[in-house]
Image (cartoon, rainbow, N blue to C red; front, side, top):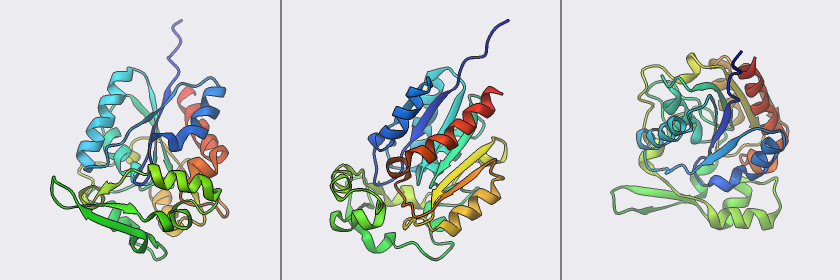
Length: 241
């Protein structure tokens, strides 16, 4: 009897973060004997970012549990659409868009986001603008439940996102969460994506399990790695049957 291969967990960061933002989650997954990798999300355009993630998934040649944070939820929804290797999705304080919906549209669907006032914009040579969170506002806006010294490091290593990426609508004819089981975890005090919006998207997607962490910020993978890891482990357990 041939044993099915163990799924690999692929982690996709969002805007204003980078791959190392998953380090605490990666450590916990590795300690449980799971293979897990954090992808460097380009943050340039939704279709381009998703195409890159699809290439990574295809190259692994294994069943995949695909997790995304923030704008990374847009990317995994697009990347997983129709991809046979993706067996489960985990949305970590993340957008779960429907066809045609953008991150900008979903973040403004409910009141409560203060991200706009925290952003700095500047032009890029490829056209349009890109955004970063002002360093003096990063701690409060992005990761209020982390130590100020760690927040300062995260502000210094944040990866800006283009306006195009945030305004691109999902082009998949059917969002991946309609056909692929999904799990959700988010912070109650998320200032980037209001908790009400996150609850709405989890309900719409038919979440198999939703965790709302009391008092938690947007930077869940760093500040609440146990809750994030538990959500991913639920998805892995489902894939393993």
